[in-house]
Length: 334
Image (tube, rainbow, N blue to C red; front, side):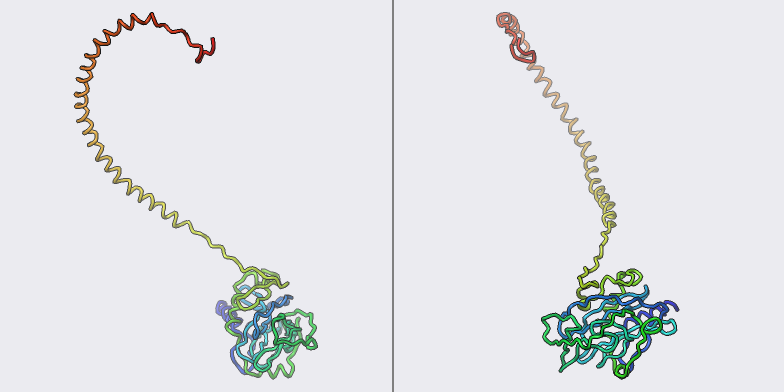
């Protein structure tokens, strides 16, 4: 049952609300309050027509994790995004999923910033099928021409509490928000669902690991550039691939077997050829000996008298040619 309940919580947290004519109620209920909202710099809007979806704390298998704020394409022209919020009632914290609609509904009085000051939306408006950005509230850059600047609607709110109810905010929906709650709503887009799922897979986004200060506070788009709270880019996580040595270990016996298999025929051939070589050597040795011995004896007999005849002459001449000791050699000079 606990596994089933946990899976239900994760699924509801990811998919939020479906298309309906009233605001969807509670999707996640827990007994631990969410952390405060981190303060972060909004990245520049990547392209005209995108709308800002503020960051929020979601809940999953490892507790709270931060879903970065992101620029997103709306599902249809004329729709605005109402962010979800946490509400507390008798110590139970419940998540109310966000939705798309023609008007901004109630989002718990939470100050998400960048057009979402706790009530309504002042980050821009639809005009004639195109969205005009309030450059006083959103970071759209100088290249955007469909903009205006209105600072009078900006709500100066420094409260970073992330939930409504006891111990948190005490906001209640006004008349326009109540009317918007009764309108037709559309669930988060598939890109938003993918964005939340991606955040749930990162350990650095978990409150238990980052102490309420996520490494990635915002993104330029779904799957796009990562930014920390100060607006600096964050490198994508790297995955070290381990190289297995198993194939090399398995190949060594095979190589040894191949070497043995190759060497065996050569040894066998050598063993087979050795007796033949010895037999051939034995057969040829007597013939060589028979041929060599008579010839050597004959030559010895012929040369012996000559040597004997020459010997007296050498003995006779030797006294006449005695040589003096040399002045060079191993003994040095005399």
